[in-house]
Length: 300
Image 1 (cartoon, rainbow, N blue to C red):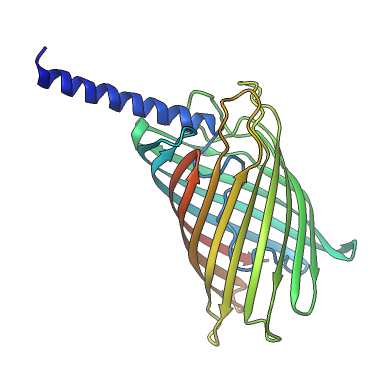
Image 2: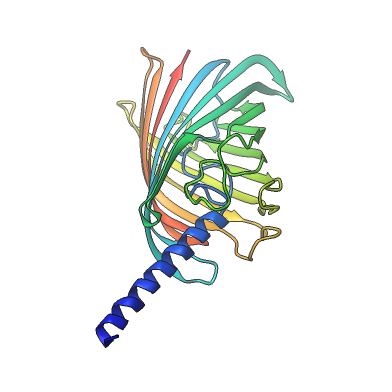
């Protein structure tokens, strides 16, 4: 074997090793790259995310596209690994005329449809993901503030395999608790400052016996509504895995992102559209990339 052949062989082995490590890293995160060690995808809510609407029935469709080009490993190494995730989360919300604890009471469900395309692994997968059932949505409203509390369960309805990095499902159930608020500094409510937090408590994966660590994230937004009705603002999210997963190698996932959002609501059509772009500027133990989101809201 010549020196040139040995060099080429060494590079090929290194490349294969990096691909294997990247595949294992994504599989270790217990599901799609879009989330940060949990079912809930950070960045799908932005400006006025904690605001619960008045009594009625609503549809919100979150079309999300996430591109990543590298994966941060628990040992602080970074691997070059390209891929993307495209998802449509179909959310139905019904707010009743009843009140509970002084808040408007409602319930919701989320049915996600997702496509994972990981170039580095030459694998693609599409299907219906894990479904969310939320029997409790509480919304409080003040003159210059709004607040929300919600609770629900992510079911393990999506296909999952511990050896498949493009698996649509997570392979476990998780309880999600939501708490957030929006404050309007001015009497006309043109300015808004909001923060929405999600806390996930995971169950054990039947296939692997691993119990993923609890996770917490905060989505925030600072926006202003212009005279023509267009709303513009800064948005971001910060997500943390709070404890190591039981039965898996140590390494907590963490993500931080910053971006912009624009939105408009047409009262005559009872229809709203929001668009956002966020860049992940700091990531630990997971893929790092950019998120693009379109949100369609329809009032029935």
